[in-house]
Image (cartoon, rainbow, N blue to C red; front, side, top):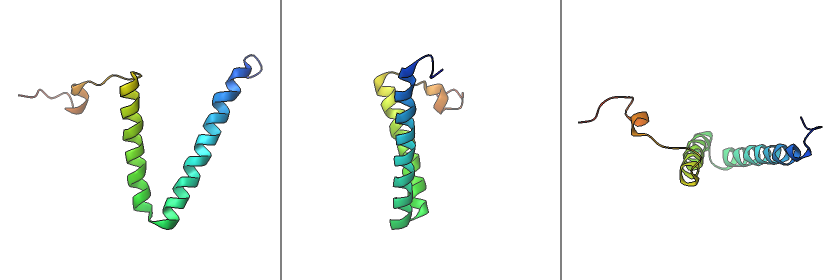
Amino acid sequence: MIKNNHLLIVPICGTIVSIAFFNFAGISVTKEISATTRMVLDSVRTMVIWGVSLLIGWQSFHWLQVTNNKILF
């Protein structure tokens, strides 16, 4: 695919840099604080990314996903 479309190099390099930064930050946090803090930060990061994707409009939110398909009264 890269041979046919050279623009694919940009997101691939971005992904590599992103993963490298994430791993470096994770190791730094684990050295300075603890592995528990790193796990909490990973969870917060996931929620922030999800929130941004909701704000941008890449995803939509449905209350039924939160309630496990139970009817709220």
